[in-house]
Length: 368
Image (cartoon, rainbow, N blue to C red; front, side):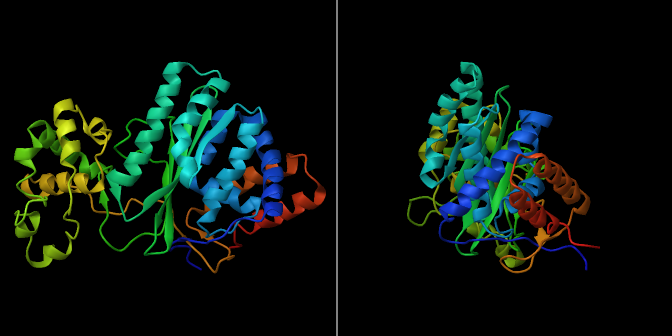
């Protein structure tokens, strides 16, 4: 069987039964203690930033392979273990309202880890900007509803966050790692996992969008009320828009003409004078519609090409709700499975728990 296709994180409603969650926490505690003891907190962060490993860990803990809940529940287990154990790792944030408390929690948890004020502020910045990138710089129709920031005692961090697409009834997960991160706005992810959409996706983080990012900054610096307003939709009646510039076959490609632009945010950006796209993106109030407007003006008026390719990097073929996955990156999945197998075998767990975990683990790798 050819191992290609998509893994759609299906939206599954309801809550995990308490008895199951408690078992997952017990198993997770045993696995994570071994991981930290053997390889240190930094390696754990690297593993969590790998979509394949994260998905394998979720499956071993007992969750469905293709469920959107695998992200939220697995992070719930990690939060329970990290924040109640002395492992040199903590987790801030979570699902829904919990994600809004991330910055406050970063301060509290950072102090518990003995981090300096400067490092704590950098962690808060990373939390804000990673969320902004995946909700504004990448526009595939997914709205973030889960944001988890994992922080280590040396100041390192990883982010696992997930977006929801109600119409497609699917979710998409984004992974980040501070180690070797050169830019927040150019190819910054360690992986994006989910269904690959068939429609155009605005990806301002792609290398191909580099010139467009610079043009967006120039448009703001040169006064957006002169460089942008004439071309995008505004509250003014009969205002000419980019739709006038689009005709023929291209009209179907550009179905993202913004209906609203936050001119107050652009005014703040103009007064702030951002030096690069990262600083522009960090401006308060600069949302998806406004960035779409800047991107379209950059491309259609000034000729700075932007990427419309879906940035999903990890995808799988899958069966039913509890089906066995067929990984595209077989060797990577085998390494993840072997790593978890060693951790499970070494964990101080009951024989029955170990056997059940190893049985689930064997399902990750289909026989050739």
